[in-house]
Image (cartoon, rainbow, N blue to C red):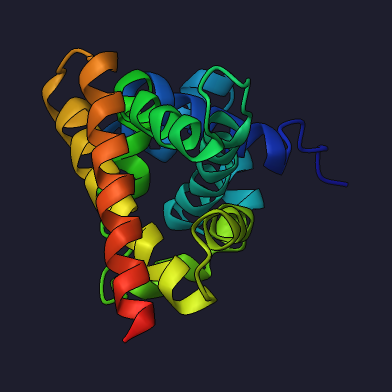
Length: 191
């Protein structure tokens, strides 16, 4: 009878996520995960076929973390869309390693920009835009994409360059982008 494997699949995924969050995705190796867990590499390769499977499990946990981070609204801002945008920017600043892992490791290679709106986590956000702006789904998606590109750009600057978070500027940029995107979407819908 072979010995029981003590380290679980969930523990391995959690350790991989923590390595990415604390050190960066460049440090995500089977050996480094095993060191963190205090075990040999054997249990990791028992539960996962490859480091790519472990990377995917860490990615899934990082996406769940990002969604909670962004969508747990506190009412700090007068408009939910403004708060979502501010929290997204905060995520790029506060969780730079996770931001880079999620968005700058080639995960979206070959995907159409508008196809990213098909993420089920975005449905409530796009629903709100549709209602608030009085848009059909297609134009609400287009408006969201405009806002997302702007917010993602600013978040990328912070995540990649250790820029400070300028709340006043961030808020004004988001308001400007929201106002412009809404006006553009409404004009496009009327044509």
